[in-house]
Image 1 (cartoon, rainbow over the protein chains, first blue to last red):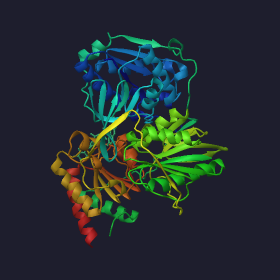
Image 2: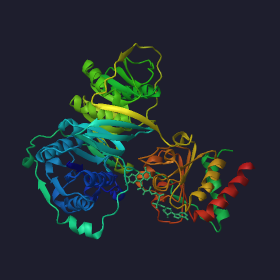
Image 3: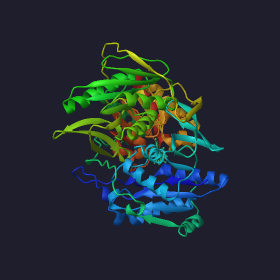
Image 4: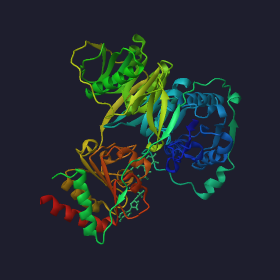
Length: 264
Length: 306
Ligand SMILES: Cc1cc2nc3c(=O)[nH]c(=O)nc-3n(C[C@H](O)[C@H](O)[C@H](O)COP(=O)(O)OP(=O)(O)OC[C@H]3O[C@@H](n4cnc5c(N)ncnc54)[C@H](O)[C@@H]3O)c2cc1C
């Protein structure tokens, strides 16, 4: 059974940049693999090793300008290949930049069509940067596949997939028929860092790049934010200093009493 | 404006009504609010035109019936609390009605005559604004909109369950203590600065002294299993809004701190003066927690009994 894994080159949330006026400097933020997508690749590799087939890495570059992002983007895709993907199919097109989750899902559906369909699609439960958790359901709907979200354990048997959905208060076991799109949580496995050899091998694996017209996409269901704003953290940022731990502790207690947050 | 609110538990409806009223007010339109309850037992709430009820605790048992309700009712928007089932459901409905969805809306703003849905992105470091147009569905952050309680007993329309192509084969309880750190007044956060499970006792002692609860960063619950998952604070764990949050030995990763930014006062203890957590704190103590905590507990004890 062939498996497609959706991998996003996410803005790196640890390297958010802004200017003094509170503007978000998107273009200055580097890309990194979206964390939960690594779990998805790792899970796909585990299933492939048990069931046979291929693992396709699919990705759409959604942060621009695409020209300047290419090196970062390729690194992300190569990382997914190093984790065990067999080949990568990616879409790079200025029209896909910030087009929103529905447009991304639509593009991915055309990419899956191009591959002639797959038995299973895996992705992370949310991307690191936008955390919208929408692509998997949209994609399933475009493809006519079943969709199960927030899965922390899954097994496949006789054309069916059994999933443990990790909900806020309990875990729900759901069964559905393949083909299906499944979003996985960070708890589903613990991906190992790729070895140097795996990284080197990843550079020899096929990576095919398409434009939107290559996969027959002309119009996109776009949903782009009108604006972004940097969040200002307005904390006092006072470091309590003192000659001894006692002095520091005592000064801190004074402050907490002043703030009215101590139960007296 | 005609809207549908999804409710999984009774308190969802008052909050949904607040969200919808805010939206209608911003748009300058009359509101007709309807509700769809997915729950073992129905519940009533004033302010709604029609209340539909699907008698099941599981979304996946009811997807078919929800589509039927959507066929029955043409609405401009559907809103749900931002819980996993709510996000899942709206994603499905958005494709069904050919609309768009915005996840985790924390405020509704009117700017230059247009109405925007604002949501946190980039681990809470930035806000994205989406223009609202009919056909935009959204989940709202729980706890951000002051619930509206309205009297009245609209009729409840029972909808038969139709699972569609899914079978729910069982439910497992999560391993949990009886804590609710989301509503705790004081939270003491345990991070990787703690070297062993046993050392967490210090944090528990401090929490008890302050009348609060112990919470933790992800590695403490997910990787080490030193504390149950219901104490894990972060985008993939619990969101807290105490009067006082004291992260100890926690570096201040965006995925963690974003879920604590609604705290009134934050006091960080970390031995690294460059730890990002200090940027998100009101007060900081640069010290080894093993040296500071015993003294802090002792001083607090003396001062609190006085
Ligand atoms: C997709 C994704 C989702 C995530 N979701 C969450 C989430 O929901 N919640 C969450 O918490 N994290 C989450 N994380 C993980 C997050 O990125 C951080 O890795 C994590 O929060 C770090 O935990 P920490 O601060 O305890 O550990 P570290 O980052 O290792 O920090 C330990 C800190 O302790 C200090 N320290 C060490 N020894 C001492 C000492 N003796 N005294 C005082 N200070 C000491 C160090 O200076 C350091 O700052 C997520 C990550 C990803 C990729």
